[in-house]
Length: 380
Image 1 (cartoon, one colour):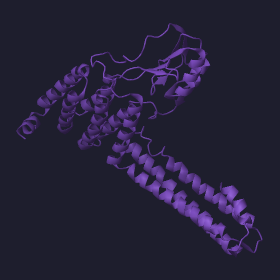
Image 2 (cartoon, helix red, strand yellow):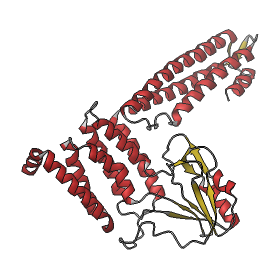
Image 3 (spheres, rainbow, N blue to C red):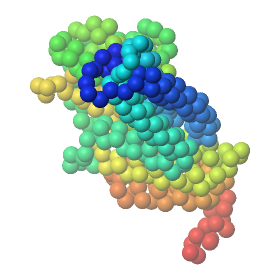
Image 4 (spheres, rainbow, N blue to C red):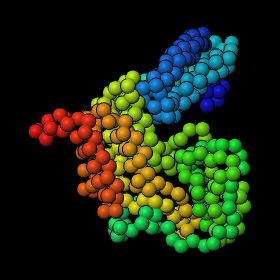
């Protein structure tokens, strides 16, 4: 777009004309000035990314993957291309349309607006409350997308009860390449291929896990589906993402809490804030139907079965490691006990036993290691 505008706008003829040398001066100042500012800003952003990784989690890539980062960079580069192209297109003209300098000023203003937004997002990415809020928000979005609302079935039904009886296995798909991380699955491609083959694909590699050479990726049931079609649907990347990964938010929150409880930092208040976010996510799925999920095509026939975490897996990832690391932090243990008691009130009946076992352990830890804290809490 910068190249096209730089070639077209100088050729506009009209009543409002300005001296070409003045327009060229404006283009030089705008192009080089905005580029210099953007270069400085992006250099500083590398420090922000490094600081966030060192203080929160190396897996935290919310700011780095923010679309505004690349949009601001693209607009700045486009503005530079426009300025250079327009300067060359003006050439030896005595006058040029006023549209040229006006466009340069408008584009520079838009670039500065994006740069300002970029700076504000960078500031948010180094503030604990904003980071926890963003992780919790993304986690809630994924959980709502993966797990439908409760359907009113019996609360004592086994996890993954929504998976229907499947046909016999016709083939097994294994991973032929090097070790990769399953970032997400192209469900549209997989459903379309399974529908054409009249087959059901049972995915054995959950999103967010590593695939080693020879690992089973999926089972094809019913029809005949080439292994290549299944493998093309597996999106492999170097890092975990929020797409289709319901435990990633729990992993990030636990990372932040564990780093806060490390002897080098020793910040139990941060771990308490992490538990606030963990409770919010656990309450969202406490009454949901978890486990494997069947995905149907447009005709209502099941075509894909995804392996999804159970309730115990969520609690183990988001709570257990953090709670055990907080043995010397009575503030965190007390908040953990409160979390477990409140979850028992909203969780399905079959999930309360595991919560009760963890609550007993937390209370023993508090009574054995911090009896004075328990006494003061009871007095209040």
